[in-house]
Image 1: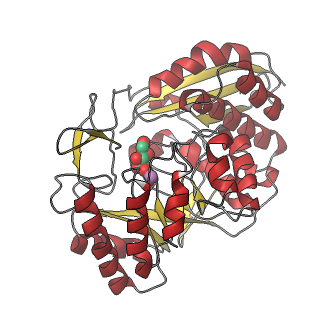
Image 2: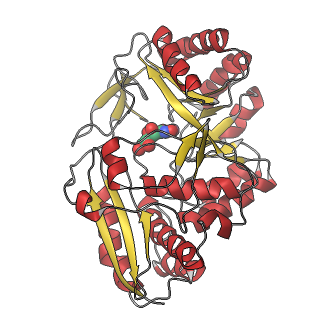
Image 3: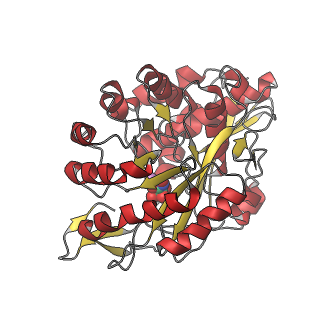
Length: 402
Ligand code: EZ4
Ligand code: CO
């Protein structure tokens, strides 16, 4: 079997997605997600100009060799653009391998290690009382884990909250929206939210919170300590993670578990955090960390150090990425949780898929391959629209992490 064609499809069914579709001489096709929120066309060009020409004529069965060829062959290693492009190729080749074998991809990864993939939903609301009803709605639908984000008194806007709508989409303008941040207001408020949530929902519902890279290590240590009475499953991205040593300081002060890694691209970004046991959950995902092949490598390293998976699953990762993530989640021994923000009906229409939600779990389905495809005709009706993520400033105008 040979690769005869690879198409890069950019579409905007409510938000932008980049998809790679690989075609073979025997008619078997595979899909991979290449979406990098706010930088979509950089990956599309990387694929079209630099990757697709080298794929033509290659044997699609050689997944590991193709990964090494693209990684080592670029000379310029790592980075989100390169690794998202490699991920798209790798994911599409796993899809093809599954279809050729007549097996869902999780079977090729060793078979199921659990009955379903436990997911967490996003409860977002402007204030504490209104977030309680959002959480109730998830509990009623069978969710066992919920991420909780609320507005902060004194701040006009904050990460994760958008006027109570179900689908929070931060990439809201062609030129970045400007937010204002105050660590003092945030640290003062957040513990009171979780006190109220625990009072209402009891001790066993899994609760999570995303700090979104906004604190210093000692501030994150204070937050973690102040949340200990409410036994969170994790605080996510407490500090920007370019400096892994920073997590030692957090660890010295709190038993609140830590999740990190949605912006990581390779195993080398995670290596010190995992091997020094500075984190509890690694949030790398298929599309931004080099595909199924590389993600499996990261999770196998993590398993040695009691670190579990907690893959990123926001709506800017396409249903192709979600399908691929679920096959990995079902197969690995050290699965933790999978983030699940539901896509819009428009998006689901463009990406027909066999994965489905039932009783707090997602199931990848039993179709050969990934069980997801792209409807190219429908995709063509939604042209790309430039959309950037916001920026964040302190009150005095200083740039801060968003
Ligand atoms: O801000 O995916 O945990 N989820 C997140 C997301 C990220 C977006 C960025 O593109 O932090 O909402
Ligand atoms: Co996050």
